[in-house]
Image 1 (cartoon, one colour):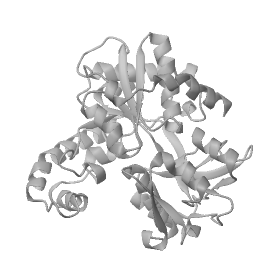
Image 2: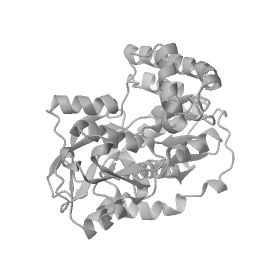
Image 3: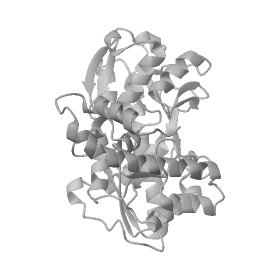
Image 4: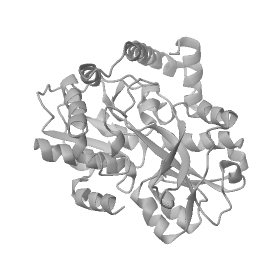
Length: 377
């Protein structure tokens, strides 16, 4: 905790407002890590930010380059700077998948399916925290409780949908409360909500722990029926254990969501920029691996190397091939996902021309894809 607090304090000057960003030369080929980068991610009180800040600060110091981090609570807010060429990459939640598929907040005339790619995909534990006086021990106890509806953040909202599916509940069984992602700790402390969802090592959760007694909801990885229901809603999620989080005694374990929180970009970013980013993240890993509780999973041994729902960038593929970490199976799936993305972007204008704009565009788009595009198995 002390290490994380020092890191955030030392890097706070590196956070800048979006309005101060210049347009970047995303297509410029480079022979080393770019001299200037702007990356986006979640807010400064989150572990997602702390991980990215640790890696970027280490690389910046080692290469005499500059990486500035833009923060946003919303999915669109994290991806807009990339599309507007004000940032090269983003560390996101599941919005990298939603953007690729044109779903949720991206099922919109301003967006649709985006040609995005995975750059580096370290996993991280997330889970659901409650106060010890709420009577909530497992997801099944959420019935009748105040559960967040996260503003403009479909990735996190999907995780609440998934835990309700695990519990055999629906939103009609709980009390929905609208709240922004970063507002969750304060809302939980004030009793406005009864549960929150975050990466388990966020500094804001340690601050919350110092004010009120907290605990994590327990998920059972052996309950195959409930886990299957959860993964039907959130297919990229695995159930696994974590330790050393806020609200835990020394040596205490709990089970939560384990899934990749990748650094991603648009396909249009030059292959050499992505290649040297992947290379820098690996080569400088020994200097930042102990910076936070989860940066130990940022090396090539631990990152996700098989494309799941979004293809990997050619620059990353080149680096993984050089390191002997790219398989024929990964290449086959990557090409299938690239072709799937091309089909979606071809179909989107046809779909939108006939869509009922007063209806649910997301659901209409899903139905259109089911009818017109062969999915990737």
